[in-house]
Length: 400
Image 1: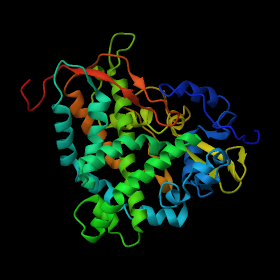
Image 2: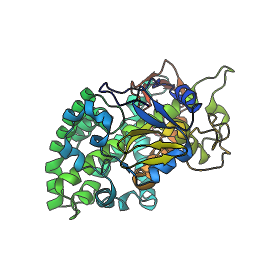
Image 3: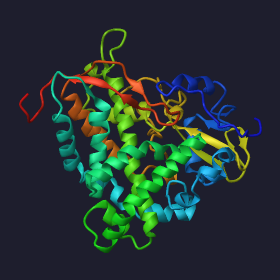
Image 4: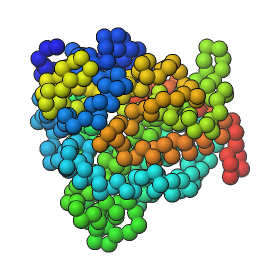
């Protein structure tokens, strides 16, 4: 291990297929130092669980030695108001304001609404013509769900869609100064859009999620707005990436001329769990040691950065048999796609519901890939940018 440099740390992984890189590094152990990242990589399932459930780590991006290169680009005020980067009591207070509306029981009540949105999104697309799954289904469907839940207008939804890619880079490891600056600008723009909406809903609350959060007396209005912005962004960016990657996996023709979707029972509930394990969009999340930590036989000093590589932990051969294969008969622990411990993703149940509904309705149209897939150029979020397909089955409620 060397002293962190002032160069922007980067990992040499391929956004479309990062898994060979993970496996090369795993040969050196579950916890390895990476010179390019200037951080410890946590690759093993149990090691990742230990970090995510432990209290000896901080989410504060300014605590990382690698933040030296981006410190001037970060808005401390924005971070202090976000549950995503706070720890301990501050995190619990901010998270507690929205915990109830993300319970599995509450999300189950949204099923009919999500299905109606999926039907309207997918059934409007014609049969036999090339459509882009990402721009026509994967992005607009979860955006419509969160937009309706928040009760926001089309202009605000469009702004979310345009600015979300910039904001999400700030919440992931190894962002450059330029990415952090762009994320800060985008965040300020979204806060400015949502602040008057939240103030209005606080004074005259409705039945929507924005009203529920804005009305919480334990939150400052600015904190409520940051919660709404980050929930909205996480509520569609990651779902869109997961949907796209899952569709590529299911529809790609293999060397034997067959497609995975043709040999699977796509109604099997185990399918979603396996797609989450194999194609989870968030590749890695950062932490900084707040005190000396020991993971396995590795000592990590206070102040050193780690990168918990969720995608590698989800394919740990010590935990999952045939870790790179999709198996509906798999038994074992849940994947770490949504994290673990105090920061386990609040929107996990909603994401599962959206993915299940979107896959079922899309596959019912008998889609076929018709062109090359392009992938987003990001070392932290994996998902397609374009995914051309055609539908061979007609729309459910429309004449062709």
